[in-house]
Length: 146
Image (cartoon, rainbow, N blue to C red):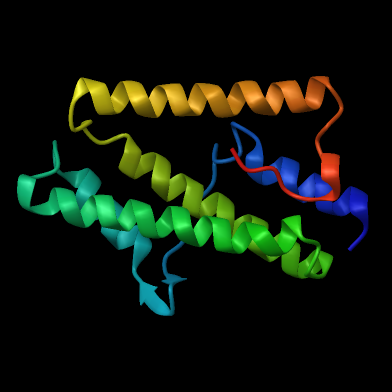
């Protein structure tokens, strides 16, 4: 894939509003296991709050989804896929992000956890802004981890 195509895909999956209008995938494979993601998210969201017995299951699902998102993002970042494969990966990443947003929107465990989550999101937005403002979106030829 061409460099500008790769950058466009990365910008698309990292855009703050990327999940607006996006659908949660019906099924997704996470670590080799198929998961009925849409059913799981809707089942959890249907309740007013996450019952204590389900909280660990939801937290584990969020961890697995975050891990899967990173695994799908790496081939795009490392330019290891064709543009068509990158498009498919980007669409799946956005679907994962949509599911994560839905699960994150559930009642927070406590105000401290919510504050940490907000601070992390703010820091990520700030670093992305600085990278763009300083023209260092692809400095060093690879991905930047914080």
